[in-house]
Length: 216
Image (cartoon, rainbow, N blue to C red; front, side, top):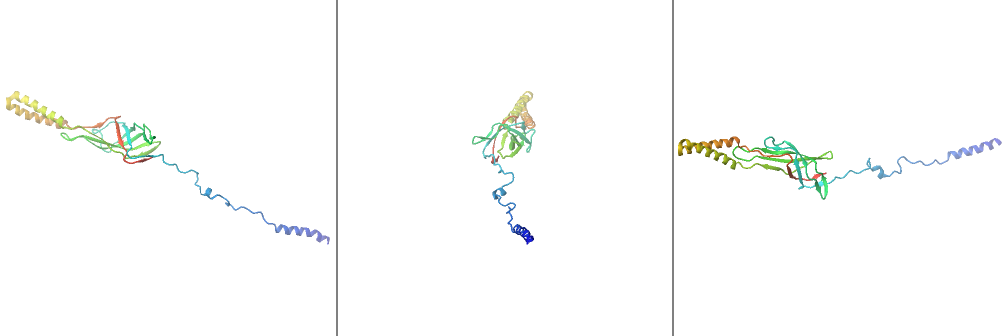
């Protein structure tokens, strides 16, 4: 009997331990915020653009080197420096001193007795804060003066000199012959030296216009 009285408390304790309810455990990931899970790494939104330079904005530059029809051909590159800041609504978008690149669109000397020399330039891009921005601009062109007055002086002067020499040599008839010969010599001289050139000197101020907007 005493033996059972000693064993009974042990059996009761063992039964209670088997029916004891375990503590609840949290599931991995449960209770997290969906908004936090879907947020992109880094936690910052992309930066917006600094602004737009609209079409029609003037670009005032100075060319950095001389460009002319004697040395340059269509396609040659040139550099220029912005001489006035580009502003939009009172805000400076591109500061004075910014470097621009451009190219020669056309370049040709005149003919020997007629025509004019002409040269054209256009801007292609500018570089700001380590980034290059392409641009589309109007062309700036230069054209030489006409040949007519110069040729008239050369040919007329040759005819007058020939007439004077002919008159001394053979009277009136000699004057006519001398005038014809002098005119021929004057025409030949005009043809030999008559090519006109045109150019734009270094530091010349030029004004271009944007043909399309530029996103900054």
